[in-house]
Length: 383
Image (tube, rainbow, N blue to C red; front, side, top):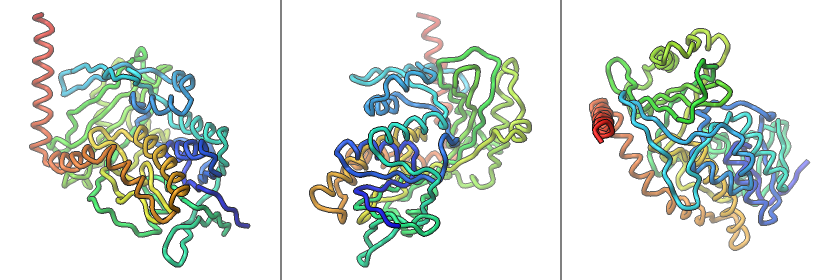
């Protein structure tokens, strides 16, 4: 059996759902294919930045996103605490939310489906179909079924089967963050702060990364730690031990379970987060890359959901515009959109992460921020 669509999207996460929702706004015939059955969990920090909230609002889900636990500020521990409010920007919310991915991703995928996209869950894509020129013209599913489309959007994650099958190389030297987290109950009031812990070390070296405690509401918290592989000894790090070290520093009165108990309950999950564009240009004839398949996570913080949504919306819009006006051989419009939106930030981010991988540089940055925190605290007490 074969079927044909205007746009076929691999992956039903935030990038894929946003791309589908955007594409159907123009009347395109769209299918989303995901190997999972929803709701499904996905390891993540579960934090929605103000920009992520604004993008979800743009998709018509303002009331729904407001039901998630709201956060109004971030507290940076270096180790002296420094409290930061969300910036006030015209037309943007002044707050964020924390949302479990099993709930958020289901919400977004159902929204794309209700807008008119065909969604096929429990459907595994095994690879792309290419014509004699090498252009991607569709997808092969597990079992042999073929799905043809004028454009394919690969939003299939950090280990993108589509990208691997095409054996692509990026013009940029992207990098990855390694992250690990656990969700648990805490004996503390629900907070409205995203807590960031910068003092993260391995055998005396300051790591290019941070730990976090994000409030999920209902007394639950997401505790995690992440670091980038620009640190030369990153492969020697036992991420579970690193997470256990962070848990041991948190207040005893929270009565958090030990790392051994969390592991036994299978509450500990680790993942890789590609950053700095691991697929560039972000398209090839017939296919565009979005979200983690693009390596779109924000360099400064590793924030992935907002960039997944943003790249997905852009991919859906640009794919349909290119098909309408030129055809599937050239998605340069998508490349231009991504470059104009993120080019400078990501270029600086690649340089930053190379420097941050040097322990002395990372340590100096933490000490500088800690000194600023002390100065701010002193000024507040005096005046």
